[in-house]
Image 1: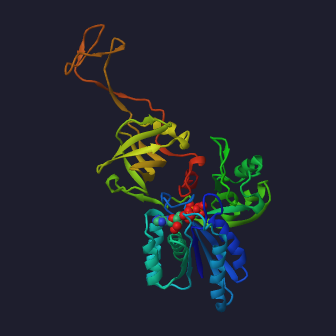
Image 2 (image 1 turned 135 degrees about the vertical axis):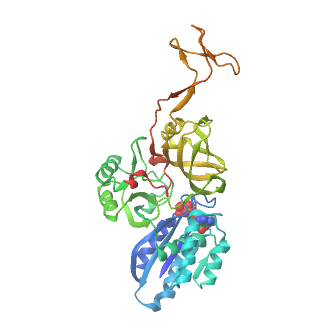
Image 3 (image 1 turned 180 degrees about the vertical axis):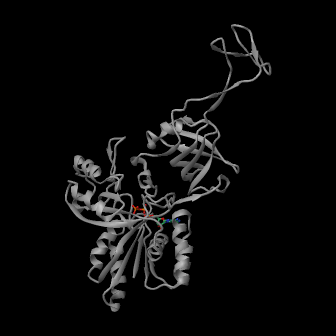
Length: 414
Ligand code: ATP
């Protein structure tokens, strides 16, 4: 039996992963939890999200078939008790998949992928639930059914790529207080387990980044490529008491949200991989954001490295017209927010006024070429010169402090 959950929290409190962690403990009385619980990140541009657009799925092997109704009741009651119903934006959804046909699997695989890449309507989830007679419970407007069904779909059909996150939760009486974590131990855990773990600390910006600052139950999360690696890092961290922890399998850091596309196919609130040439020189705008135009043979789009991407903006600032690049990121208000860039080819040529007598020649007037101020000689054309560039070809990414949950870090390419 697969149990999908979503949309139980608010900005002020709770977290759907915590509800899942509490539920896992209760469900163990009814059977065995198969595989790892799934922590699925859905489309990062959805306006309804509280924080990271997460949805959860738990796969349970019930000991006795006659417990199934009691299990459903337990899940629904736990959501009823723990979800933040007072928040207008909290619309929980719970889905129970008990059996499946090939047709249902195919539909769910497509729906789940679209929930990561596209913008869906509640009705689309409800239609699939009804068509395949999938047991479910939507609270309030039932928006959470989208995420709950999408996470269940991945549990049923599998993930094309995945990583792990160990999430440690705080004791309830500490929620909303400053987190007590020994930073030295975090740097040591990172050094001992990297590259098998990542995004625990941000060296360039000298910050511990694995702990949130919000008043939710999460103490910290360790991301990595195996259970063993995240557990090893966890064992080294000194902190306030951990109430409980769960190792999740997740689509975080896999780039599953990115759609390869041409610029004229781009829609707001989706995420893309776009290849093209820099059209205009980067500009720094108010707030310290760096913006440039990218063109391919279909259209032009603005690309931005926003202020929170810190040192990454230094790379973007160095781009020149005609540089050949591939950008990765989400599009909002017709601007692509760059998560990563591959500089395929640098334009190292520049037309400049010719040099004569050790100095640059001056324009002799419109259409009249260039004249040497010293000897008076004239040249018709500008000269093509080789330019020294401060950046080289290759991949560049935003620092860990600005990483989006779904973005695949370069450390995972090694
Ligand atoms: P947290 O990460 O703190 O658990 P959250 O950021 O996951 O919170 P939710 O409270 O789950 O935010 O709210 C997101 C809402 O958007 C859910 O109701 C979910 O079903 C819905 N949703 C998720 N993906 C899509 C999508 N692609 N299209 C439309 N709605 C979506």
